[in-house]
Image 1 (tube, rainbow, N blue to C red):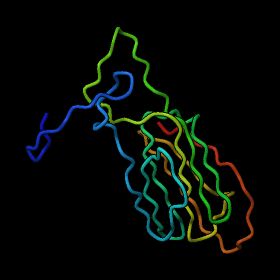
Image 2: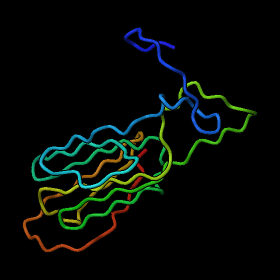
Image 3: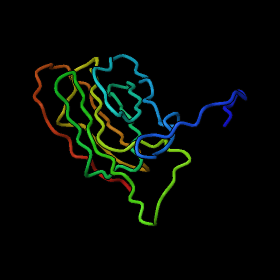
Image 4: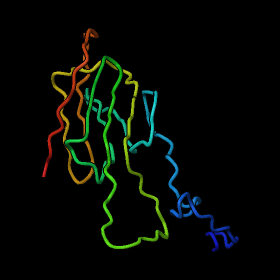
Length: 153
């Protein structure tokens, strides 16, 4: 097998005859402006940006059931958790030639640069993207609150 630069690569089988180890997807680096990433695991990619008194968060969660997503805000910390169920393969023995998609639990924790009005947060899910619209708050006293995700479309 050759890679993009024409060099030969070893084909290494994964555990229990699974996909080649070299083809497993690595977690991407987070991009974030104005805040800082605190923790992540098997993360969904996200963008965080500020515009006209709101902080917006867009998270790629294609293949995740909206009912399996939890969004929490606690003062300056945003937590997004969920589960992406593995696709069930029902026909005979399946041999993967490439396995890049990730499955299982994901968690993103992001430290926001500003306090958020948790009573007015909007969370929508459309075309595999979770969009959070969070109004900035002047009063910094805040409590932990779970945000309901609404399916759009």
